Amino acid sequence: MEFRTPVNITLAPFAIEPRERMLFVGSCFADNIGRRFVEDKFRATVNPYGVMYNPASIMHTVKRWTDELVATDEAPQTAVFTLGTNHVYILNETGEIVDNCRKRPQRLFTERELSVDECADYLREAIATLHKINPSVRIIITVSPIRYAKYGFHGSQLSKATLLLAADKLTKEMDNVVYFPAYEIVNDELRDYRFYREDMLHPTDQAVEYIW
Image (tube, rainbow, N blue to C red; front, side):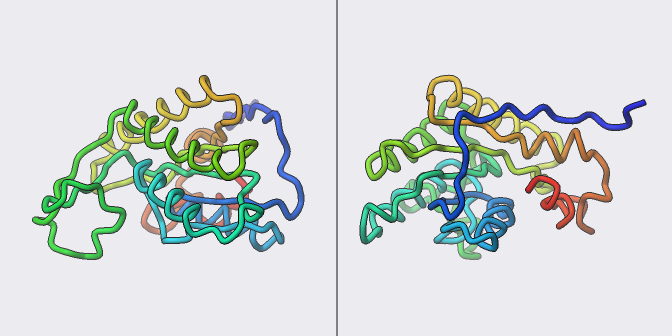
């Protein structure tokens, strides 16, 4: 009798080679996995400007980082985008999406949710930016298994569903984009609160190790 539901992981059309140059951008889950690559001596850059939760902020990071590259031979061979939420905060004064509210008063911002198409558009722009410095870059998209209690658990699921649909959209239209089911592994294969930290929202080190 099988007491768990193993997630079938489709084999990617490429392999990540030892000491490969990599870029990780996204939620704190990207920090956790990216750090493991760094510890295993991959030449990985992990969230160079801090944790970024939504596709717009991921795009902003990629653009800023590529603008600051000293040489194109530092360009990543593989980039990993870990999507946390489709919620963004817009600075009322400028109408621009901000990547970090820096603990400023909430009244200065308007919160809204990106649609599936908007999420996909921001990710396309990030991928196109990386293509300019390395046309053969491979993209791995994951959705963070971390739940956002402040949206309510139903709202958190709706946010994840939007991100999953955007990721699926990109994998179907781009040959160099693949999806890794970290979200499904934690929620379906592990599926037990012993794999969550005390806050019951973030995966434990053991869960991260399992995904690694």
